Length: 549
Image (cartoon, rainbow, N blue to C red; front, top):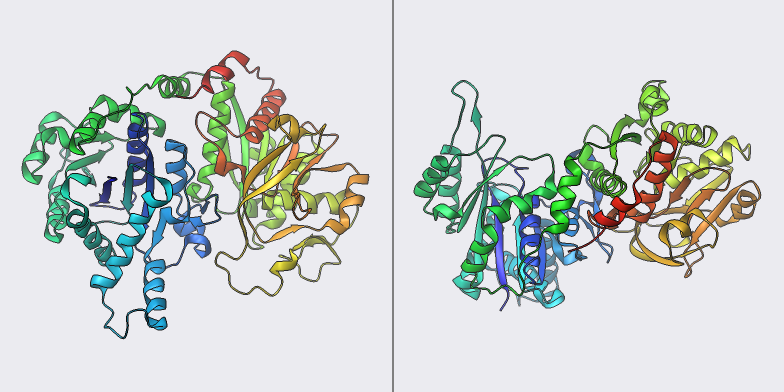
């Protein structure tokens, strides 16, 4: 029978529950178990797709086209499994489903209440995961902290799960923060004690406590937490902040967390965990390496979490080539005001990522122009590809008013336009081209050389496309369309012929990059960056790092 591990948070939000759940998933998968992870978000939005990146960070897209929380990116990168829309549940989805059922008469006129109707819907969605995936272990992370009023239905559902499926099939982990007082130079456990007390008042006794801290946690402190929170001493896990998140599963393994979980869930491992690849990965991260600089020209750079997958993909590719990639974060609006050009000019490559809205668009176009005219390696992702096309139309085809109809509906030269099936769509949530689509690669191009095969599948999140009416004139002037969707003849990849590397993808390759298997387009881009910087990449190291467990 499927086992369920529930991760709750206390003291403060953003304490690291997502990475903790992902690392635990990696530990269990290393023992030969089939693992899936789910995120429960208490906010009333139906999904993160229409939420501000400044509030929510990146919107991660699954293979089946769900717009989800950025923690799903961590999950996929750690356990290397493709997740689905069922892996991200929001309170908005739950309430909407229950209300729709009530409107249809499914409840036969009964009074609809949080208990049992809302909690039953939450449990139904949790129990759906093993039916869909065949997972033997389902890790469930609850967003927010204990004590948040909006989290109460989710926590009550988790409490009921213990009775529904049995104690031996459930395991509760509470992730808390140990604040440090500078005046006395000590870590305080009292907030953790209060947080656990709050959790117990709801009816959940944690089986394990992960104590997060920026400082070393001594054994005496762990014993104190165990005593006051009524857990085994071995089940108090000190988790000190590290700059290398891929080191966390290794640290947990050293503390015996994997064995403790297996014993607590009464499971037998199918194989002995081997950490050769992950150990090599972390050692390579710490090793002193040649440095290259990349300018990331974005609209939301004040919150780097808005580009979490892009940042991690650059890191994966750089590690595979034996270099350090320093990202210079540049706000595109500053370029429009003639500021921040120095970090762009000093960089060995430029990335222009996705985004929505017309703010800062001209700055991104200016960055694309600099890359084209100065032969600087350029990688455009979704919007970055579209603006690369707009820049080409303006400055190579001499169409001064060329634009995307997203930003100028009246442009006389709409090189980027709405797809036909998007015309008339008014809803914003989940109405774009979302999820996995096929892309056929053209022989003799940078793209096919990077991938090493003729057909690929990539994840999308966009509404506007390259306007095929202009394809021939673009190709006549030096742009080639190296990736095409075979089903609807839409452009997926555009690149320049006479340029070391100027490639734009309509899709988001960053969603498929993994620490031990970096995405080919990012690797090809980093190779071009290294060539420009005069940095040699050791081929042997490349092969070694890419080995998987």
